[in-house]
Image (spheres, rainbow, N blue to C red):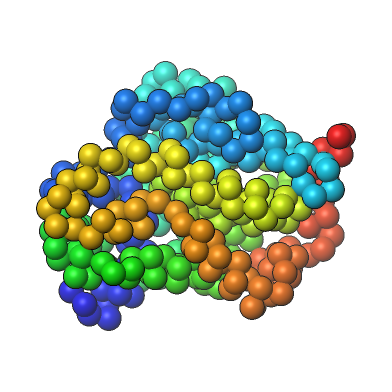
Amino acid sequence: MRSNSFKSCFRCVAFLLAGTLLLGGAPVALGLRAAGHKVAMQKEAGQSLGIASIPNLRDLGGYKAKSGAIVAKGLVYRSDQLSGISPGDMEKLANLKLKNVFDLRTAEERKKRPEELSKGVNYVVLDVLADLPQAGPYQLEKLMRGPKAATAVLGGGKASQEFRKAYREFVSLPSARKAFGKLFLALADKKDLPALFHCTTGKDRTGWAAAALLTLLGVPKDTVYADFLRSNDYIIPAYKKAIDAFVAAGGDPSIPGSILGVKKEYLDAAFDEMEKKYGSIEGYFAEGLGIDATRQAAIRDLYLDQRR
């Protein structure tokens, strides 16, 4: 289980695992995990919209940029996967009047949890991790059924270490740069809005996309991090019973949270990679994603409401 092939597929598989984590032999499916976990309707920037089947669905607007301008609401949303949605919640999703949905998941993730969309919404696949090996998801799922075995491979901080590597790859991996470049170009076109982008739990690939866009818009770093870390409020509580069972069976208590949640150090790794390779968020968009200064300015003009 410690083979190089396992380690090479971990960073791709971990995101699949986050959606169908096998703890104690019982699958925890995202479409079911919202039961009993209530979230409030959005009252402030970054809060869940309160759609129980999609608890990490949030409007990216409402934040104040350093200039004093406010990021416009109702234009772009970040979310966990659109699968296992109740009929009532599908009506609420339809009320957002989305024109485009961008799916950042792998083919394996999409196969396990097919997209569910309202009629007339354009669906676009942008596989961020397409260039990573796809082999081995069932190997990892099997591993997670045995807490002690999982601890041997992923314990002692190894899971967090792999996620830090993954966040660096969000910046440098060719398929990631291609996917995020297409995403932000699409989000720059007003006629394609409102739009939504998502991965499986809406925290990692989606988390970096949201952080990068907010940073380009001039939202302060501490606010960007707060938005990123807020995913923990809507994901971790739903897995409490499964996490407790994993730990009770001898599993390293750091593993579930490292996989299912987000940590400041993850986003630190992505920003560090960005600064080392491109110097700034503007350099990342220009050199890494192929979005020049003119189009970056157009994105700011579109999303920033200059009224104070």
